Image (cartoon, rainbow, N blue to C red):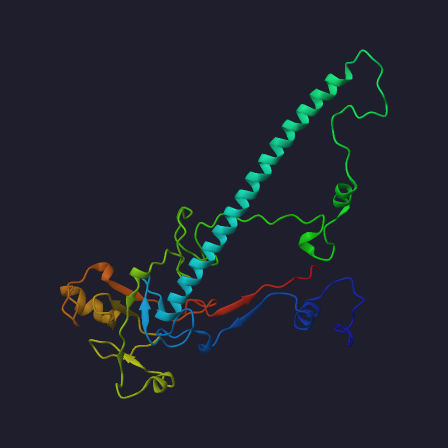
Length: 308
């Protein structure tokens, strides 16, 4: 390669060096970024607000939410479903009215056609200045109304614009996620934004974390890395420690404690209640939209690609 070979732009081949330079300058190609620890949600933070929970609740799938945030979310989605259902019913009524008008117009056209044929069969000459069809003469006001066109300045009122079709709301679901296959929902229920499963208020379980230092206030907890410990073994909890929530007491314990101690007797060590398998809820650890529980910590952004 000559001295000026890298800066030559008259070649017939789009070289790797040119692709790399255009990727940095013009935004072509796919970018990969390794996410840091700051991009991963802590295990005790709400999945909606991404802040440490003051009054945490957990779903049966193990996703932690702030109670106020998840209640506001459920209320908002119910209002949105009701609004969509109202718009859908209005659209159905308009379509029914339109079909009735079309059928009425078809019947009137048949009658007018029949009368026109009947009036054309006569035994005397017709007066060309006489209105024999039976239709009233159009007035000037009706002709002016017919000449009125939709607004050309509003995109939704132009002659080419079509009314948007409103689909029947069968429940709100989040963006596609790797969830188990299931049949389309037939009810208008709210779905969990993380797991995609139906979310009901009675399925939320209150969670009670055991503080590492009870003397530290809420503001001090936010600034500390180690905030909570296991309710039984007093081990420090974190994103690297698998945890579980016991449904009867809401206590948070490590999975190691569950396997070694709790599953032997299936008794809640905090309040002594009997446990079932579904009473032990595995707490989903920190993750973002790009990284789930530390499995994939690489963000990828696909952009237009230059073809050689």
